[in-house]
Amino acid sequence: MCSLGFCLSSNAISPTTSLEELHFTNWGTGSGLPHNAVRRVLQTADHYLWIATNDGVVRFDGATMRNFTPDFPVALAHSFFRDISQTADGRVWFFSDPTGLWVLPVGGEHLISVRIGDGIMESLSAMPFDFGDGRIAFADRKHIYFIEGDQISKSTPGKTIHLLHRSPQGRVLLASDTVLYTWESGAWREFADLTATGIFRISYLAIISRGNFGWGAYAMGWCNGETE
Image 1 (cartoon, rainbow, N blue to C red):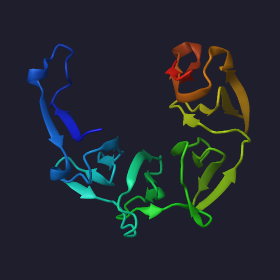
Image 2 (cartoon, helix red, strand yellow):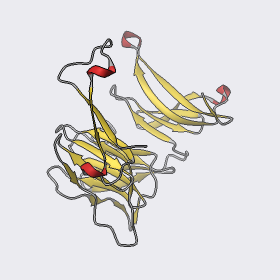
Image 3 (tube, rainbow, N blue to C red):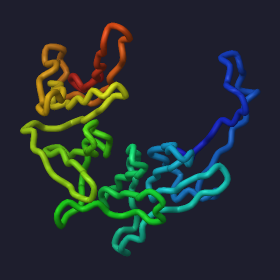
Image 4 (cartoon, rainbow, N blue to C red):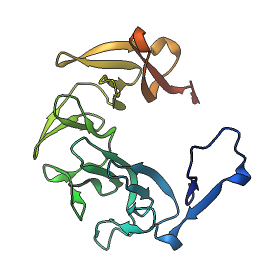
């Protein structure tokens, strides 16, 4: 990982444009980043860029960076921000190691820790996303958590959750080891068993549209140490 860089152009970039014609600007700790290792960049609906780094998170408006990293106890010298997502209600979500899941309310000025009972989320298989029925969902390896208003409920599908994904078409898939499940009529139903492919764990999942022919899923996983 390295410092953040942007290619700036006032027009769409043509495939024939040479690198010499493009203008690149790099931002690092000298420009306001908490750390030069950038893990995730997300542009939210209000056009801000949120940048997650190995030592905090900032919001960039194109000119200045504002640090939103929470004030952690002195014992936590660093906070490794791994991921960012935004849900349809406008809230922005952040996952940090070792401090767990955080949320920025709409119009908020400070990140708020999301706690499950008395604890924090130590790992996530899926960042918060719109589940499609008015609920926001996120998951760890064993449970799916649903947010409705200020309430958080927990569901245990009885499967190891490696990935949980919702496509723009509204299809929700759960990847558990080598099997894909789809959410239909309030239950998880087996969609595809990839065991015969030699994959022993699905590590990437995308859902693609096939136009008039419906939809399909693209899965990638690990097979004897190699990606397939």
